[in-house]
Image 1 (spheres, rainbow, N blue to C red):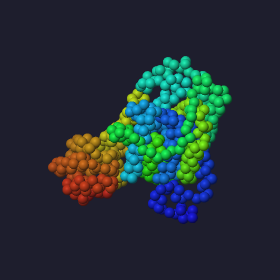
Image 2: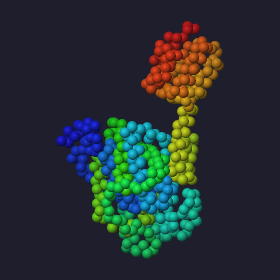
Image 3: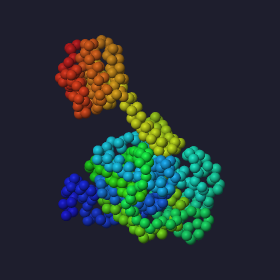
Image 4: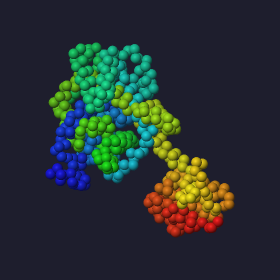
Length: 564
């Protein structure tokens, strides 16, 4: 039976696809991975819920929903989906502008947001919009994570220090915390930084060690044994022994509309992180990751989270890595972890009553420090100072502006960087490598030959409205500057993988102008199928006969160039 299941094609499994190749021999590894995942997820999900202004059990609901939803529709066998500290500060910052944190309206808006994000992700998967995951360049993503890290650190420091949480803009919060450092509670500081040390030490030894759980248990035991609640140490308090029950949020239509920009923003970030996670931990190293299918899984997780009364969920790279490293072979590990969390909610919620808030803060301090990619920042600084400035600008925007606006600025910077990179592409001239039929970009390091009356040029970028004007101007400049004036212009089109409407019209006008000036135009190596389709679609063959399209520059020159 196991062999038959393994041989079934993917399309035979519309749901629970990661279980399609499950074999009984996988069970021990999945159970061990699930137990380890639960030990790591329980404190992390509690802490992330508190980060967003929710009670701890809401974080558990999110983890259960994310695990079930992704197992149902996702493709990756290892990916863990649940409450995530990357997106939580973003949507919490957006929701608090519409309702007071922790209020019933705030909770209802979070539920609605989860449903909307889930729907967007499912549509993204159905329409195969995996390319959206590339909206954030690496420098912008690094800056984005650095900015989010600062938000987490500043939001958790009051709990760790035993101080009142300051209000106002981020810089004001940092200033107020600095002013009141002398008022910190020794016991909360010891708990918070003690848990941070335990988690960091465990991680340094092995990622499989549930340092967060060990720290939380030790901190809770210390609170109970030493009666630290009477000494100013705040605790989680009563956690209702409740199970998630399906429901829909009761909010007005205009509130749904106000959530649209925030839901799009969160969905984009989830897409980026989900794609990065599934590519980092592929189910099959010999096959490309099915990013679109995993969007479906993450979307289903958010929809279930909304129905369970929780908030949007996201893929977690660290938890996914734990499943992969501890022997998990299918999403059964995530389902087993969800079952453990569900059992804790049903029968052991009272165990969480004395967990100190400072311990959860310590867990999040570790998360914040872990997501700062210092090595990558240093590498980018050394290799591309311009892109290092992107890191700084993105992080600064997220820290100084309201967080959801800062994220939007980061996405805008990433897009502008992509546009700038495209518009930087300039015309290059080609020369023939002596003694060969190869034409190569002219270089001071390689001696090349030019043919009389022949000019060969190329553009190493898609030809679009962004660069069409400069491309045409550069071609005309090269033609006018050549002595003698060329009779043949060959466009080496290897790098032109796409041509849009504006560029096609510019190219048509350029070809006509060359013809009027007595210059024959030819295209060589138009290899991109999209560019070939553009020639058909925009009727470029009406001005450039098909016999002027060649498979090499040498062929074009030998066919069309007049003997010298």
